[in-house]
Image (cartoon, rainbow, N blue to C red; front, top):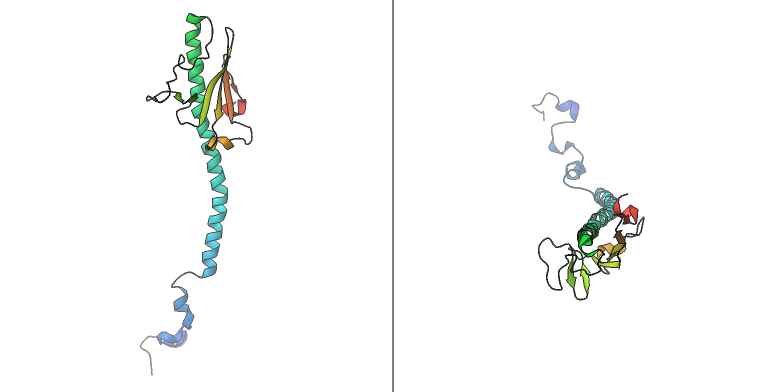
Length: 173
C-alpha cells in the first residue's frame, strides 16, 4: 500500500490513525486541572477587588454627609446676620419636615430625626449659640457607612462655624 503524499514515509504514513489516540480528544475541551486553576485565579482577584470596591464606595458615600453638613453650615451663616445667633432648628436651616422630600433637599425629616438625601446619615445641630455652632452627621445603623471605621473612624463627621470638618481624614485633608 503506497501513499500519494511524498512525505508520507517520513511522517509515519498517511493513515489518519497514525497519531496517538488521545491527541485528537485532548484539544476538544479543558481538563479539570485547567478549570481549577482558572477558578483559583478568579477567586484571588475577587478577594482583592471586592474589599477595595467596598472601601471605595464607603469613601464616595461620605459625600452624602459632607454635602449636607456644608449646606447647613452655609444656611447658618446666611441666617446669622439677621438673627445675631446660630440656630439649632433644622427646618429654619432648610431641612424639610417629616414625610416631605423635595428634589435637591440636603436633609429631610423622618420621624423625629433628620437624614441626609441618601439616608445614610442622621444629621443634627449639636451646638448653637451666638458665637458658634457644630453640625454632626452620624452613620445610620444598618447602612454601609456604619462600618466606615478604617483607617480612621468616619462614622461620625462634623462641621463647625470655622469651616473645618472633622475628623480631617474623612474630609480629605
